[in-house]
Every structure is written in structure tokens, then in C-alpha cells.
Image (cartoon, rainbow, N blue to C red; front, side, top):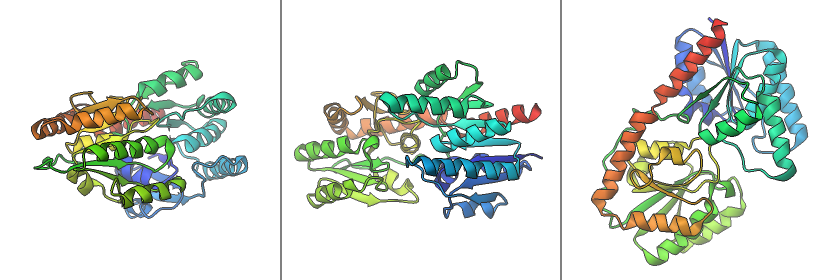
Length: 363
């Protein structure tokens, strides 16, 4: 069989969103090679027969010398392994790994999962990188229409593409669970990196306003600090009883089950798994009206959308949800589960990837 290499910035990316595809490829007899910085979750795959190559990587750094070093690392690995197909995930692996694959004439499939907000010279620079990294891709996998239209325009519509329902959601793993029996105390989750681009500023301001009016509401934050400047801000609000910090959880399912809804105020996404996972378990979602979030929420039926970066709009949506009778909150959660079953099963994503890999190998 063939050698399939997957390149990612973190072990979580493989474990949380690609496990089904990776193990399916291995079961089909392919030699599966996973490339990313070491994390404990890589052992899940190596114990099942996949190979792992550990590389250093500064995921969000802008040091050009570190990036050049990463390109050289990809080149060394690809030259040694000579995979038949490479699958890349997120910006740096997709841009730099894609560039090296293109130069070496190795077929590669790109899944970037969201375009950053950029302006001025940096915007021009990023668009140049996209062209360099993706112009020779065998297939572009798009998680939302907004990203697809922008990138296809940059690539002059010359690259084959497929549309994906994000990373999909494993409907068996994130199974439907009964809604809380009472809404005397209403719990809202925030599950994301604690950093500006995930809308943490709007979330914290929303919590202050809503708690002053509805003392029976809880705002629980789950996620790592990508910006240490927020540690003190969160600590102050936690001491005042406005928010609670739940830390980084390896398994969010018990905390999703305990919640009444999730708030996802992100500025940009590919397709947010936070919304998909909460919806699959029957929890309504309140999210910013942006590509990658709006596709997972049917406004007024499975949750509410609000204007991105607009605290007033977010507060209005949260208060609208609070005012719903418990039965309507529960029905909203059931509608969210039905939407996931119809549109966002991870089996859909896995099958699209298998089709494209077979197409490439058939050539």
C-alpha cells in the first residue's frame, strides 16, 4: 500500500479531529506517518501501529528564522520519507509544508481551517504566502464558504477543491445527553484559547453586565492562556464571582453535559468544533456571526448569532436565551443535535478525504 503523511502543529489536532481518518488509513494497510511536536496523545497512534516524527515548531511565532528552520525540517523529512500523499492542517504546516511538497512534486491536500484577520502590508504578505504554499495543491479542503471564496480567488480557481463540514463531529463520542432539569441556575460555557481573537474581551464584558442583572447565571471558562495578560483580568473577575475558570480539560463531555449553552465569540474560525460538540450533545450555541460559526447555528432554532466584536449584540443574545422557558431551551438543544446528525457527522469528512486520496493514488 501507500505511505500517507499527515502534518499538524499539535498532537491534539490529530487526536481530537483526525483519529477516525488516521486509523481508517492504517486499517486499510497504508503506512501512516504523523509529523508534529511531541504530545502525550501521539502514543494513542503509535500503539496502534502509526509512525511518529517529532519536530520543534513555534505555532504562532512570527520569527522568520524559526520559520525558515521549519521549512528546512519539512524538506529533510519529506526527502527522507518520500510519502505518496501528504495531508496538511492549519496555517504553518499547510503553507510551509505545502511549499516544500510543491517543490518536490509530492501530492498534498490542504486543510487550513480559517483565515486570520489581516490588514495592510501583513495582509499582502499573507496572501503571497497562501499562493506560494497552496498553488500546487492536489486538493484544497474548505471548512466554510468565506474561506473558500477568498482562497479560490487568490489561486485563480485553478486548484481542485472540496467543501467540508468542518472537522465534523463524532456523533457516537459526543452523544446526545438529557438537558439539565432546572434553569434556576443557568451555566454558560466558554471553551477556547484565552486570547483576544477568540473574543475573550467581549465574553468578560458580557459576563459583567449579565451577572449584575441575573445573579443566577454562571460563566465558566475552559481553555489555556495564549496571552498571559488575561490571567490577572480573569483572576479579578473570578474573585468577584463574575466568572469561573475551569482550566484545561482533556475531556470536555462532562462539562458540556452540565451546561445550558455555550458562548463562542471568536473573531475567525475554519469551522468551530466548540459549536459542533456542544450541539451534538444537545446544547444550544450562542456564536458570533462569522464564517465557520454561523454554519453550525440555525439562528433562533439551535441557538443565537450575534454581531462579531459587538458586546451589546452578545448581551442581547444571552438575555434572549435566559428569558426562554426551560422547555424551549431544551428543544433548542434537541434541534442542535438533529442538525449535527444531518449535516456534520465526521464520517462525511473521513469519506471525502478517502475519496481524494484514492483519486490521487489512482493517478
